[in-house]
Length: 246
Length: 253
Image 1 (tube, rainbow over the protein chains, first blue to last red):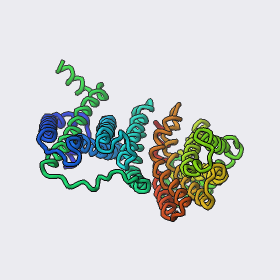
Image 2 (image 1 turned 180 degrees about the horizontal axis):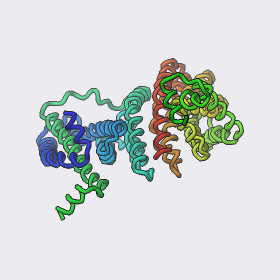
Image 3 (image 1 turned 120 degrees about the horizontal axis):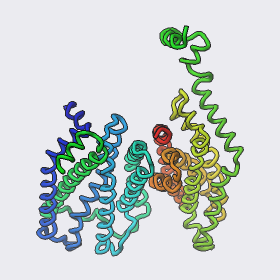
Image 4 (image 1 turned 30 degrees about the vertical axis):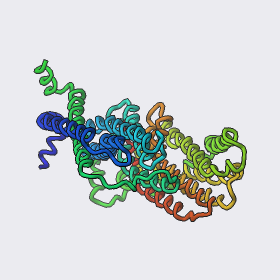
């Protein structure tokens, strides 16, 4: 087991092992997302309060899940890089950051679009929307900090520290925003009164969430492989690989 | 006998000679001495550059002056938003002061000496942050009630305003120092610091402004102040290590 993990740390092995996993992951991601979308958008029953507008949930909730998970995995990869100096971990962290920022933006945007039919406004200072917005700024901070360093190694370590500081702060921010919202809440609309979902609604949601996770893993692996080729371009195995293909 | 052999001997035996004690034992004064020296040095430097110390205070007063002009000079309107305004303006002033925290030491090489010292860097960094808070955060907290009068802040909330700012600005200094340490090696770190640090400031703003708001409306302020205290305790425990790691990255990278 440990030998396997140590092997994963070497770019060459990571490149070889991920090549075997990737086709499965991509197939799973596409199959789950396509099934979930068709089921959710066409066959799931309409919500009795919100009508068809509730179907935004099939994009909104998976994106929001990923937005938070990606930050945690980015911080975990940063920690692995800081402690064991495994370069692949940093490459993965660097590749995850833009995806996480995109997912946060998708969650925010779909939330805003959803707000129009349900709340009658594009933006509501709702606790969840607000903490999502802050998460978006945290992602931009990590990406900007990495880009600001001319030395790649220093930028990588700085981004790791910031991701770790951020991951400690995310729960604090989340709970303080919840507290703030309950103090300021205007009696306009509550999510809590909504009835529990029937299986016809939540099974496609579950498929979508799983599909988004597979997509995240597959995309991160694919991008990390590209990054390995870019950073290790001077190594012999990379040259042989590229020349063999050309 | 060459110097190398002397080191070898002194590892096993207790150092007695002057050369050996210089090589292996703690420098004179120990950890307390190092902290005291950092404290005195930073205080002296800041007291000699009073302009730098006054800048955040003047900025705070100026920003507060802008709001009545931009919004409305009516006392009722101002009083309603005064807690939030005072807190946001103080937070921005604290943010502005972060650049001076490590910049001067980085430029003249003193920061490298700090990293080379045998004492734990987190404690030395904490000392520097403590001086920074003493010279910027605490004056901001003491000045805030005066600006509160100008914003027609209801009486009875002045003490809470000062206490919440004193507690809160200590957290702002600690968290901000991480951002300052991460960007000290960069040529243009100014805007980046605000991008890194402002999202992390939000909990402090919520509970700080919440405390003043609670005092204005006559509610219990203890809960808000207790949470600020808890946040400060967490920041005191964790931030020094993050600051030390960031300083190492900025200087070695």
